[in-house]
Image (cartoon, rainbow, N blue to C red):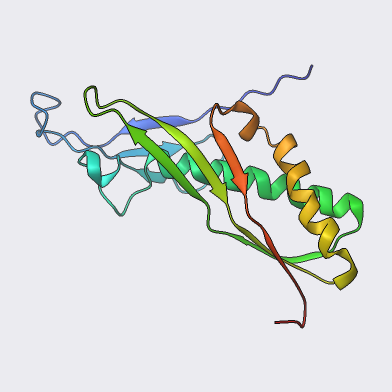
Length: 160
């Protein structure tokens, strides 16, 4: 089995001068960098947990990782099976459950809603079938312990 290593550098940027002296004394902001990459990603906790809405939170990044991994596998499978994709969008949605007593939580499900445009009407069924295959290959989905569904829609260039 091949092994792949990934590294990111994370730096907390939310110290307002008092560190974590009290729960309200610090901000939840951080920066994510990766060696050899461009601009950092600004992160924070969800606004429900005293974070900034303008920054990405870990929950959104998990949903984004699932969505993008699925897309990349899907495009690969379409390419090798002769389905020409000319546009791909997804508005993925995840549900996280928070324990009232402890404040801990977990994801219960993520649903991907890929909207794909292809060039041939006779390949719509195959294009939609390949989403199931992409789900089986997705590295991120295979690493999760919650349900991941997909509800794709496929259109053909020049049709409404």
